[in-house]
Each structure stands twice: as structure tokens, then as C-alpha cells.
Image 1 (cartoon, rainbow, N blue to C red):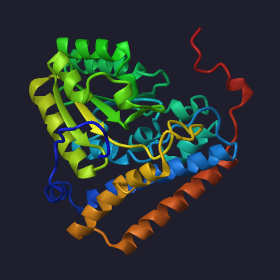
Image 2: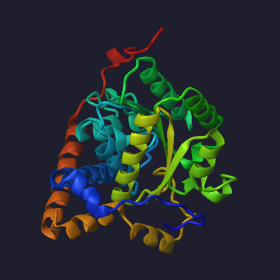
Image 3: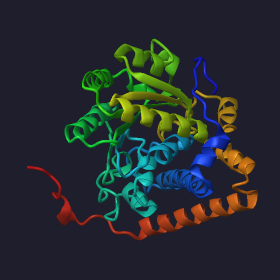
Image 4: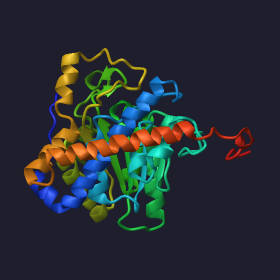
Length: 338
């Protein structure tokens, strides 16, 4: 992890993690990482062709974090919320690629009927895509409160956010209440080292942020290499068990890198080509595939087949989005509360 910050990472044993997951689920996890990567690449392509409107924040480079969370803790039983960088989480929680691309294109077949666009995707147990910087922290605490209020055991709320949003007052108010009220909340700071174009050490006074913020509220904290699926799996597993055992919230800081600018309009001139090349060498998909090869779960030929299948799936989804209708004008006021 290239950074000026000294992290105290919790590591996972790749062999033990893969034994725990099993070959079938390990390959499914890789398939979902490829789904996210290909979706984001095609979404960007659609944006550059003038078919996607508004902002576009890609999750490319961070795939290991949210995919590992799903396989470590399960998905349907929990409540989830994230930032405007929300495509990956929606795909993992049931949104199809066709629904996602239609939403990006503003089409009626979209995930939110073409009304939400890139930043506002939802599923039955995913409460956004929040377009407000730091807005999701309060939602996450509220979701955790709802689980405790209803006495729903072994279920937690999981809230993802970027490093740039932890300086917001909402974060600190939410952490204080989460610990004060002992809420079953997992806070995941996806520290991609940059708040838009500002390096984390220029924005956050006391690093590493996860460990130091957790101390302020008496919370348990783990720090993990967010580019490594096996490390993430081990940490999410341990954090989940802690919350179930104690009923208390936990912070995970996942140190990672995004391969793109903050949004598609950001040329990311604050990183040199050499810096980016070094970052991309630790592509989380490549890191995971290397583990799978060592374990004998995959070959180069199988990996190439998987990549081709995902490319074909996304091309078909783009065609579907192209051919889908825009919302009818008569539906303009649907869903509007008066």
C-alpha cells in the first residue's frame, strides 16, 4: 500500500480464506469483481458517448472490499447504504447490469425508473446511493437503530463512505450515537487516499484515521489492505462476529486506491503516470486471481473465458439500454410526495 501513512493492517491467510469460501464461491466472487469492473468500464464508455448524464463515480480498483463483505457476512439479511459511488453495491445486492445501465441512460427500465442516475441506485435492502457527502453516515446509524429497535438478532447495518467524508460533522454525530446507544453498525471507511483531488494527509489531522477516530468513541477498529480480497474477507468476518457478540459498532478502514479520477470529469493530474502504474500493479482482481491460481482453483484459460463472458454480457446490456424507452412524460409526478 503506497502511502505516507503507517498502517497497522490485520491480515488474512489466503489459503485458509479460500478453504473457508470453497472453490465455487471463490469463483463466484471473482465473477462479481469482473461484473463490477466491466459495468464501470461500459458505463464510462456510455458517458463519453453522451448517453449518460450527470456525474459518474467509478468503483474501479476498489472491487475487493464490497465483494469480500458479501462473502464474509451474507447480504440479504443486512441493511446497506453507501456513497454516490454506488454502482458496485447495487450490483452485489440484486440490481442487474441491464437495470443499472438503463438507469445511467435515464431510461424507464432503469433501477430507479431513470430518475436517479449514477448516484442514486437502490435495492430492497440497499438504501442508496447518497449524493450528499457524508449523508450516508446518519442513514447507516438510523438503519442500525431500526434493527435494534425491532430486536432483530444477527443482523447489522453496513455503511460505506470515503475518507473525504469523515471530516463532516454528520460522521462524528453518527459515531457518537452509534456507540452511545450500542447500535449494530459496521462503518467502512474506504480510504482511497484522495478526497476528490486532495491527498488524505492534507485533509485529516490525525492519521491513521480509522484507529484514531475509533479511540475517540471507544469503538473497535480494524485496518485492512483494501486491495486484497482475502485480507478483507478475514477482517469483515472478525468484525461481524464482534458486532454479534457485543452489539456494539465497529469501524473498518480499508486502505485502497481508485484507478480513476474522483469522477469521470476529473483528469486526476494530481497523480503522475508512474504513480498510477505502480498502483495498478496491485489490481485487486489480479491479486485475487494469483491466490486462486496458487490454490489450483483457476487457470489462465478459465480466467480469460470469464473475462470474455462478462464483456459479452455488458455489450448486450448496453444494447438493451440503448433500445429501452425514456420515461413517459405522464409519469413525471409519480413518486412525488405532496
